[in-house]
Amino acid sequence: MIQLALRGAIYSLVDDPFLRDEAECVAYESDGLILLVDGAISAIGPYAELRDQLTAHTELRHYPNSILMPGFVDAHIHYAQVEIIGSFGTQLLEWLNKYTFPAEAKFVDVEHARRIADFFIAELQRNGTTCASVFCTSAPGSVDAIFEAAQRSNMLMLAGLMMMDSHAPAYLTDSAQASYDHSNHLIERWHKNGRCRYTVTPRFALTSSPEQLEMAGALMREHADVHLQSHISENRDEVARAAELYPQRKHYTDIYEHYGLLNERAIYGHGIHLSEGELRRFHATGASIAHCPTSNFFIGSGLFDIAKTKDAARPVKVGLGTDVGGGTSFSMLQTMSEAYKMAQLRGISVTPAQCYYLATLGSAEALGLDHRVGSLRAGCAGDVVVLDPRATPLLKLRADVAESLDELLFALMICADDRAVEATYVAGELVYEREAAA
Ligand code: GUN
Ligand code: ZN
Image 1 (cartoon, rainbow, N blue to C red):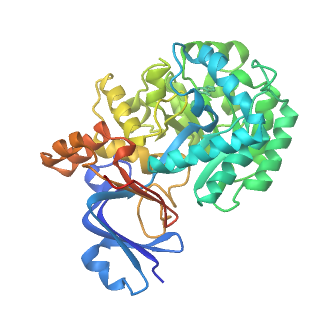
Image 2: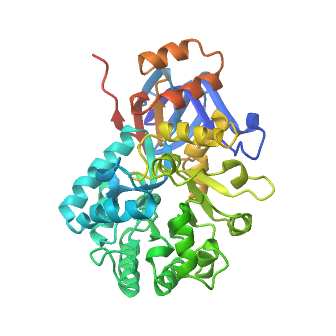
Image 3: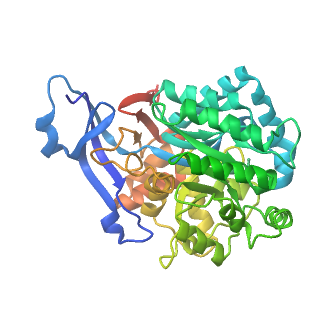
């Protein structure tokens, strides 16, 4: 029985506009209908064609002035870093020591972890993000807290224990064996528990011993469908330090590949300074990159080269991440805006369809979840964001002179933020609704 139906303009990507003709990648209905049964999309199409399926028991919600899209998928974010967002004056390695590690240390306190986890999930939903790949801390309770919070609204959540056993303060580090044991327990408890998915999470090569990377590889071998997330090649000092710590390895990517951590279940934050040879290994193994532009600008890490990374001769899968708290906004619209500007600095104008792709289907593909989220198709989860392209006086002025859908969507991603999120649905349930204007 159709329980809920959403009517409005519907915009969704069905394929990768970096690799294929854009017209084949965009699905748009100016007056569409999404029918939802048991948390999933049972049918989607023009309102005129599907209206007959509505019954007396269907709740119909009509958004005549808004655009329905797949909920945003944040491919890389740290929930334990929300309190240090916007911390002044450092680049990566100093930023980690000065701000990040002390903030993450607070998560041994389960009450603190729960409070921040609840805040974090609400903030994602206020920004129209319905799925995220989340870094926790090295405290196992931090993982329980985020999965418990996500489960309260049935949100598709990827998360895992931060594995770090070297070159970091003793209050945050564990041993290779302890991180393996804790990760194993957490996989048993959380992986595929509802919509939770476990992600093996070695922080990066600089804070893991060879033994710990070996253990992370063992977890990936022993659990056929858990995910993996880490960081790579974000900052030049970091790249140099990785080479010092692992002198036997050909390059940074080879460190992870050597330990069995480069495959189609793996996603790495940043990848700004990867060589052509490294990008080839990403392509060949099916590993993905999470592009995090607000973070790269803020921490001064460098300019990610989207055109080179997506080169059709050996494309690498790329998703979009906020990387809060190195990143400066939960808004995937703001993150698209910064991705556009970063590409501009490299002489490339990424199209609106490409930007919306990165924030939805691109991230879903990078996380191996595109059969369920990132697009609006029958069979996908009922994870939907309702965007109001006239949410502010400036947006209204701009939208009123837009002469095409592309122009409207582009101005929206450049100028909008959480104020444009009118409603967010997770698994067919309303989880956030913007307050009506006074
Ligand atoms: N590299 C290793 N850890 C981190 C982190 O917490 N944030 C960012 N931006 N990069 C990292
Ligand atoms: Zn990160």
